[in-house]
Length: 188
Image (cartoon, rainbow, N blue to C red):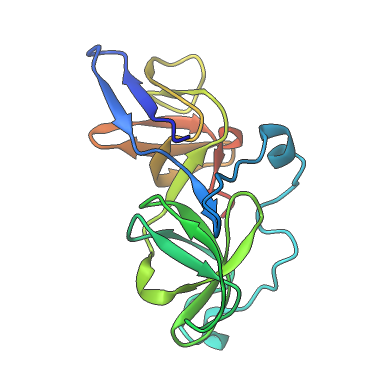
């Protein structure tokens, strides 16, 4: 079952369909964790060895956020095509955390906490986030400001910047601020 997620533009009354978010394993079962399970984790970056940029193969720090360049990417049990496919990620722009790397492979962690190896060309440095519950997008950093959009759970948004408790996000030409606690992918 694949559900469509929508973001509603309140000021103009239009709506824009979002791409469905789904994971599937080798036998094509959809993988979903409940919001309660997701909130039990204290930090997205827990238990990841911190490696400075000068000590990595890519020259970028580990851990770091990336996103998928394409809409169908195999996540493997190890860093080669000879390793078994553990997951197939099926959402272009899906945010992931790089937790280890080789020259051409990246070990990634998804929002459910699952890890697999992905071929480097399938990843982009573009920062995206996913909403963890229904939320509102505001004009500025306060719940008292005008609501720009209502955003469903699992909506994929582009991350622009963050303050301590709020992040500026965008979708197409819609831009606004959401509470940091309502999104995944904005830890750092």
